[in-house]
Length: 257
Image 1 (tube, one colour):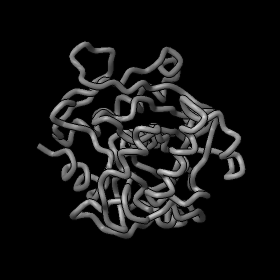
Image 2 (image 1 turned 30 degrees about the vertical axis):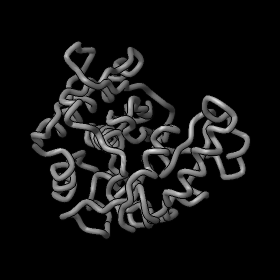
Image 3 (image 1 turned 135 degrees about the vertical axis):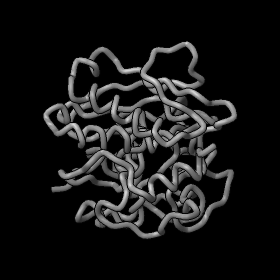
Protein backbone atom coordinates (compact mmCIF):
# COMPACT_ATOMS: atom_id res chain seq x y z
CA UNK A 1 0.00 0.00 0.00
CA UNK A 2 1.24 3.46 -0.86
CA UNK A 3 0.53 6.73 0.94
CA UNK A 4 0.82 10.25 -0.36
CA UNK A 5 2.90 12.70 1.60
CA UNK A 6 -0.19 14.87 1.91
CA UNK A 7 -3.85 14.74 0.98
CA UNK A 8 -5.03 18.01 -0.54
CA UNK A 9 -8.44 18.03 -2.16
CA UNK A 10 -8.73 21.46 -3.75
CA UNK A 11 -9.13 21.54 -7.54
CA UNK A 12 -8.07 23.96 -10.27
CA UNK A 13 -11.56 25.43 -10.17
CA UNK A 14 -10.80 26.81 -6.71
CA UNK A 15 -7.75 28.76 -7.77
CA UNK A 16 -9.66 31.96 -8.36
CA UNK A 17 -11.74 31.52 -5.25
CA UNK A 18 -8.92 31.43 -2.70
CA UNK A 19 -8.21 34.38 -0.42
CA UNK A 20 -4.73 34.76 -1.89
CA UNK A 21 -1.73 36.43 -0.32
CA UNK A 22 -1.25 39.96 1.06
CA UNK A 23 -3.20 41.69 -1.71
CA UNK A 24 -5.73 40.55 -4.32
CA UNK A 25 -3.10 40.45 -7.06
CA UNK A 26 -0.55 38.40 -5.10
CA UNK A 27 -2.22 35.02 -5.61
CA UNK A 28 -2.62 35.67 -9.33
CA UNK A 29 1.08 36.58 -9.62
CA UNK A 30 2.12 33.55 -7.55
CA UNK A 31 0.16 31.14 -9.75
CA UNK A 32 1.46 32.83 -12.90
CA UNK A 33 5.03 32.46 -11.61
CA UNK A 34 4.52 28.76 -10.91
CA UNK A 35 3.11 28.12 -14.37
CA UNK A 36 6.06 29.98 -15.91
CA UNK A 37 8.42 27.92 -13.75
CA UNK A 38 7.02 24.74 -15.29
CA UNK A 39 4.32 23.59 -12.87
CA UNK A 40 1.16 22.46 -14.73
CA UNK A 41 -2.02 24.30 -13.70
CA UNK A 42 -3.67 21.05 -12.59
CA UNK A 43 -0.92 20.55 -10.00
CA UNK A 44 -1.35 23.99 -8.39
CA UNK A 45 -3.79 23.96 -5.47
CA UNK A 46 -5.13 26.68 -3.22
CA UNK A 47 -6.00 25.70 0.35
CA UNK A 48 -7.42 28.66 2.25
CA UNK A 49 -4.84 31.40 1.77
CA UNK A 50 -1.98 29.06 0.82
CA UNK A 51 -0.82 27.79 -2.58
CA UNK A 52 0.67 24.27 -2.90
CA UNK A 53 2.40 22.28 -5.63
CA UNK A 54 3.18 18.57 -5.80
CA UNK A 55 0.56 17.75 -3.19
CA UNK A 56 2.56 18.84 -0.14
CA UNK A 57 4.86 21.77 -0.91
CA UNK A 58 3.63 25.23 0.05
CA UNK A 59 5.00 28.11 -2.04
CA UNK A 60 5.11 31.74 -0.91
CA UNK A 61 4.98 34.69 -3.29
CA UNK A 62 8.66 35.46 -2.64
CA UNK A 63 9.64 31.84 -3.27
CA UNK A 64 7.74 31.82 -6.58
CA UNK A 65 9.60 34.94 -7.68
CA UNK A 66 12.95 33.36 -6.82
CA UNK A 67 12.10 30.37 -9.01
CA UNK A 68 12.21 32.65 -12.04
CA UNK A 69 15.67 34.02 -11.30
CA UNK A 70 17.75 30.96 -12.25
CA UNK A 71 17.46 28.68 -15.24
CA UNK A 72 17.63 24.92 -14.85
CA UNK A 73 17.42 21.76 -16.87
CA UNK A 74 14.32 19.88 -17.91
CA UNK A 75 14.76 17.33 -15.12
CA UNK A 76 15.03 17.85 -11.39
CA UNK A 77 15.70 16.88 -7.87
CA UNK A 78 15.67 20.38 -6.45
CA UNK A 79 14.14 23.78 -6.89
CA UNK A 80 16.17 26.89 -7.62
CA UNK A 81 15.50 27.87 -4.00
CA UNK A 82 18.14 26.60 -1.58
CA UNK A 83 19.34 27.31 1.95
CA UNK A 84 22.26 29.74 2.16
CA UNK A 85 24.82 27.80 4.18
CA UNK A 86 26.93 30.93 4.53
CA UNK A 87 24.20 32.36 6.75
CA UNK A 88 22.54 29.22 8.11
CA UNK A 89 24.69 26.77 10.08
CA UNK A 90 22.22 25.65 12.74
CA UNK A 91 18.51 25.01 12.22
CA UNK A 92 16.08 24.77 15.13
CA UNK A 93 13.06 22.50 14.78
CA UNK A 94 10.49 23.80 17.25
CA UNK A 95 7.58 21.39 17.88
CA UNK A 96 4.32 22.76 19.23
CA UNK A 97 2.84 21.47 22.48
CA UNK A 98 0.18 19.66 20.44
CA UNK A 99 2.83 17.94 18.34
CA UNK A 100 4.82 16.77 21.35
CA UNK A 101 1.67 15.28 22.87
CA UNK A 102 1.84 12.56 20.17
CA UNK A 103 4.52 10.11 21.29
CA UNK A 104 5.20 8.53 17.90
CA UNK A 105 5.41 11.90 16.10
CA UNK A 106 7.83 13.12 18.75
CA UNK A 107 10.04 10.06 18.24
CA UNK A 108 9.89 10.46 14.47
CA UNK A 109 11.10 14.05 14.71
CA UNK A 110 14.12 12.96 16.73
CA UNK A 111 14.93 10.28 14.16
CA UNK A 112 14.60 12.72 11.26
CA UNK A 113 17.01 15.12 12.95
CA UNK A 114 19.48 12.25 13.38
CA UNK A 115 19.13 11.38 9.67
CA UNK A 116 20.29 14.83 8.55
CA UNK A 117 22.97 15.32 11.21
CA UNK A 118 24.52 11.95 10.32
CA UNK A 119 25.41 13.29 6.85
CA UNK A 120 27.88 15.92 8.12
CA UNK A 121 26.28 18.75 6.14
CA UNK A 122 27.26 22.42 6.42
CA UNK A 123 24.41 22.93 8.86
CA UNK A 124 23.16 20.94 11.82
CA UNK A 125 19.63 20.48 13.11
CA UNK A 126 18.59 20.64 16.75
CA UNK A 127 15.31 20.39 18.59
CA UNK A 128 14.46 23.92 19.70
CA UNK A 129 13.93 26.39 21.05
CA UNK A 130 17.61 27.28 20.99
CA UNK A 131 19.08 30.77 20.89
CA UNK A 132 22.08 29.74 18.80
CA UNK A 133 20.08 28.88 15.66
CA UNK A 134 20.22 30.88 12.42
CA UNK A 135 16.89 29.53 11.16
CA UNK A 136 13.77 28.05 12.69
CA UNK A 137 11.31 25.47 11.41
CA UNK A 138 8.09 25.18 13.41
CA UNK A 139 6.71 21.65 13.58
CA UNK A 140 2.97 21.31 14.03
CA UNK A 141 0.14 18.92 13.24
CA UNK A 142 -2.50 18.42 10.59
CA UNK A 143 -5.22 15.86 9.96
CA UNK A 144 -4.52 12.61 8.11
CA UNK A 145 -1.50 10.39 7.60
CA UNK A 146 0.71 12.64 5.50
CA UNK A 147 2.54 15.91 5.87
CA UNK A 148 3.16 19.25 4.20
CA UNK A 149 6.04 21.65 3.93
CA UNK A 150 7.36 24.19 1.40
CA UNK A 151 10.47 25.39 -0.36
CA UNK A 152 13.23 27.70 0.95
CA UNK A 153 12.92 31.43 0.56
CA UNK A 154 15.42 34.21 1.14
CA UNK A 155 18.17 31.67 1.78
CA UNK A 156 16.29 30.19 4.74
CA UNK A 157 14.55 26.81 4.93
CA UNK A 158 10.77 26.81 4.78
CA UNK A 159 9.54 27.71 8.24
CA UNK A 160 6.73 25.20 8.93
CA UNK A 161 6.25 21.43 8.84
CA UNK A 162 2.78 19.96 9.30
CA UNK A 163 2.60 16.27 10.17
CA UNK A 164 -0.58 14.20 10.19
CA UNK A 165 -1.79 13.06 13.61
CA UNK A 166 -3.04 9.83 12.02
CA UNK A 167 0.62 8.78 11.81
CA UNK A 168 0.74 8.36 15.58
CA UNK A 169 -0.49 4.79 15.11
CA UNK A 170 1.91 4.07 12.22
CA UNK A 171 5.32 2.48 12.62
CA UNK A 172 8.16 4.68 13.80
CA UNK A 173 9.91 4.09 10.46
CA UNK A 174 6.94 5.52 8.55
CA UNK A 175 6.74 8.59 10.80
CA UNK A 176 10.49 9.09 10.45
CA UNK A 177 10.11 8.81 6.66
CA UNK A 178 7.35 11.42 6.41
CA UNK A 179 9.12 13.98 8.61
CA UNK A 180 12.47 13.45 6.86
CA UNK A 181 10.68 13.81 3.49
CA UNK A 182 9.01 17.08 4.46
CA UNK A 183 12.30 18.44 5.76
CA UNK A 184 13.72 17.62 2.34
CA UNK A 185 11.20 19.98 0.76
CA UNK A 186 12.07 22.66 3.34
CA UNK A 187 15.66 22.39 2.12
CA UNK A 188 14.69 22.67 -1.56
CA UNK A 189 14.26 19.06 -2.71
CA UNK A 190 11.41 18.17 -5.04
CA UNK A 191 9.79 14.79 -5.54
CA UNK A 192 12.21 12.45 -7.30
CA UNK A 193 9.32 11.14 -9.42
CA UNK A 194 7.91 14.59 -10.17
CA UNK A 195 7.47 13.69 -13.84
CA UNK A 196 5.25 10.69 -13.11
CA UNK A 197 3.87 10.15 -9.62
CA UNK A 198 2.64 6.74 -10.74
CA UNK A 199 6.20 5.53 -10.21
CA UNK A 200 5.68 5.55 -6.44
CA UNK A 201 1.93 6.12 -6.04
CA UNK A 202 0.55 3.68 -8.61
CA UNK A 203 -1.20 6.60 -10.29
CA UNK A 204 -0.76 10.35 -10.40
CA UNK A 205 0.13 13.39 -12.43
CA UNK A 206 3.24 14.94 -13.88
CA UNK A 207 4.12 17.77 -11.49
CA UNK A 208 5.91 19.65 -14.25
CA UNK A 209 9.42 19.28 -15.61
CA UNK A 210 9.69 22.48 -17.59
CA UNK A 211 12.70 24.72 -17.22
CA UNK A 212 13.37 26.64 -14.01
CA UNK A 213 12.60 25.24 -10.62
CA UNK A 214 13.25 21.68 -11.78
CA UNK A 215 16.97 20.97 -11.66
CA UNK A 216 18.61 17.55 -11.77
CA UNK A 217 21.30 17.28 -9.12
CA UNK A 218 24.59 16.04 -10.61
CA UNK A 219 25.41 12.45 -9.73
CA UNK A 220 21.79 11.41 -9.25
CA UNK A 221 19.59 9.50 -11.71
CA UNK A 222 17.00 11.30 -13.80
CA UNK A 223 14.55 8.40 -13.42
CA UNK A 224 12.88 7.00 -10.33
CA UNK A 225 11.40 3.75 -9.07
CA UNK A 226 9.50 2.62 -5.95
CA UNK A 227 11.82 2.74 -2.95
CA UNK A 228 14.55 4.47 -4.94
CA UNK A 229 14.33 7.71 -2.98
CA UNK A 230 12.90 8.95 0.28
CA UNK A 231 11.74 11.94 -1.79
CA UNK A 232 9.31 9.91 -3.94
CA UNK A 233 5.82 11.42 -3.93
CA UNK A 234 4.34 8.41 -2.08
CA UNK A 235 5.73 6.10 0.55
CA UNK A 236 5.12 2.36 0.99
CA UNK A 237 3.92 0.83 4.26
CA UNK A 238 7.35 -0.84 4.42
CA UNK A 239 9.21 2.50 4.47
CA UNK A 240 12.42 2.39 6.51
CA UNK A 241 12.71 6.12 7.14
CA UNK A 242 16.31 6.10 5.95
CA UNK A 243 17.94 7.95 3.06
CA UNK A 244 18.83 5.95 -0.03
CA UNK A 245 22.29 6.24 -1.57
CA UNK A 246 21.06 8.74 -4.18
CA UNK A 247 19.36 10.86 -1.50
CA UNK A 248 22.69 11.09 0.28
CA UNK A 249 24.50 12.04 -2.93
CA UNK A 250 21.94 14.78 -3.60
CA UNK A 251 22.10 16.29 -0.11
CA UNK A 252 25.90 16.17 0.08
CA UNK A 253 26.16 17.79 -3.35
CA UNK A 254 23.88 20.63 -2.27
CA UNK A 255 24.99 21.09 1.33
CA UNK A 256 28.17 19.12 1.93
CA UNK A 257 31.15 20.92 3.47
